[in-house]
Image 1 (tube, rainbow, N blue to C red):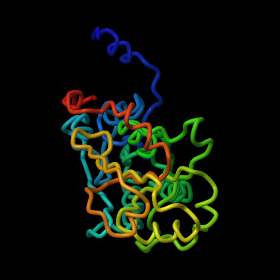
Image 2: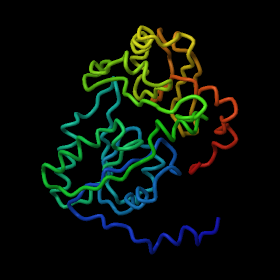
Image 3: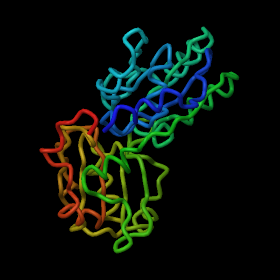
Length: 270
């Protein structure tokens, strides 16, 4: 591709990243090539980046070396900063006159606690901007040849999280209604509690031979995919995390749509 194509962005009318403001930015599901143009711009315009553990080092490397990087990763089962501490740090940095980039894996508003952080900033009268990212529940699954909707199988899809703020299976989900609502369920952060979730879905009438697919490290060169069944998921499955779990017939399309094979994984922006 001609370098002039990228050079055309030099004069683009990007919004100003103002001192004392916070941008909540989605970094996408993995590879740097899935960043939005606005997210890439923010990486170069910020004073400080407060980033999740799931943000790729290759993405962080796109920011100039002088920009401060502050890890604020929350990983299930591991020592992690409290959400209140993360939010407090964003407020502190903004009040110090910094241009604060809060960088999150996937999309800030898709199980990313972006709504909580933006709400806290609003209450403190701190200017903020939301920069959506490609969710791993969409883009990550595309890298595994899994369309979340297909008119031959499903006209609806449910996205849900596999744990609540306590780390347990969410207690406020009506599993019987969820099981009946749509053929396809996409579950974030569900591997740890997958046996319990499988039991709930089976008790609600889902069939044990239904296809269940687990995509680990989606849209990364070391992505892996496990194809199994809902019945088999009643016992613990050892797979790398982070992972997205997909229940439903869209798994059948992987046979023809599994395009992210070894020979195309060697490109940093791929």
